Amino acid sequence: MINLAEHIRSKSLLQLRDYFLAGHKPVSDDLLQALANDPRQGARKLAQLLHRRRSEKLKESRRLRDLFKLEHELWKQGIRLIAGVDEAGMAPLAGPIVAAAVILPRRYKLPGLKDSKKIADECKRAQLAHQIKRDAISWAVGWADVGEIDKINVYHAGLLAMKRAVESLDVQPEYLLVDARIIPHCPYPQKGIIRGDSLSASIAAASIIAKTTRDQHMIAWDRVYPGYGFASHKGYPTASHLKALQSLGPLPIHRKSFAPVRALLGSAPEQKILFQSKMAGE
Image (cartoon, rainbow, N blue to C red; front, side, top):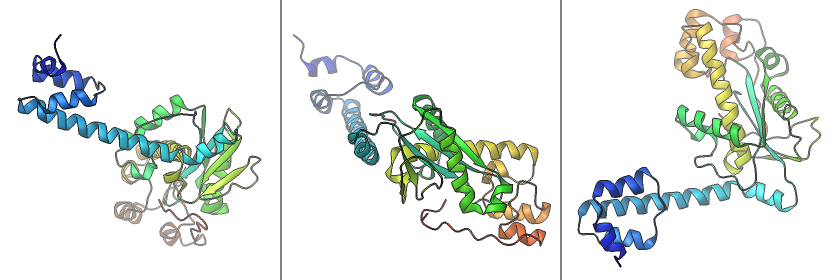
């Protein structure tokens, strides 16, 4: 009977790479050892690569387990339907606030799931959002438009968007985990978690859906109002946005109560962005 080492040596390096790398096949300790002892340098490098990939996978599995710690505590109490709630768009000078509410299934594992602000790649965020929407027990978004932001202030508009997201869920939640605040006039038990998008998988999932939904909305506005760069900065007060605002003037989608816009209009009172308990800025 051929042993494992002989079997490995009977395969070409291309066959080994195709099988283990392209196919993402599981790798045992014995197999790694056989590759590490192979006289071919390419096989030994493959062993190092597979070992590193397995270590990274284990590290990611532990990270995801820790990210579900708050949810696991509630699940152990018999609470099954937990909605994570978060918003995007508190700081921009233009566009709405978008909030999302997401109920994830138990034992859910999605590699790469994290606070949307820690995902720099827009394509990766979009892929995660698509997968979350497919896998979630329920998800929904809520909006607060520019008029509401100017009327009731950005902090309360954010709470309003969150409330609307929860109310739009097609499955009634039993408990809410909310990023950094408590949603008023909401009938469900809830807990506000400082830096919740980094500590709760459900809130992280909500942050991704809120962020990607708002980004797509601002990209659509870029086609309506060319020259402002909304597809790039999404309404945030970047240098290029401020320059465009100065040269082209405010638009209907600009927040009139925010200082740079208010200064150009010279009418609406300045709105101070009061995050209160919300410590993590966007």
